[in-house]
Length: 63
Image (cartoon, rainbow, N blue to C red):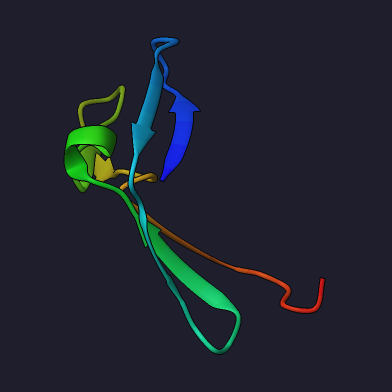
C-alpha cells in the first residue's frame, strides 16, 4: 500500500503489486482506476505507454 499526492494535489492511496526476482530486479504495477490505462494520450494526441501503469527497476540487495 502506498500513499502519494496526485497531479491535482489530492492525497491518494493504492495497493501496488510488486514482483521481486532473485536477480535483484522488480516489476511493479497499480490498479488502473488509480494510475489510468496502459496507454495515455500525449500533448500531440499520440497514444503512448503510461509510465506508471507498470514499471520495473533494480535494487542493491547488499545496501
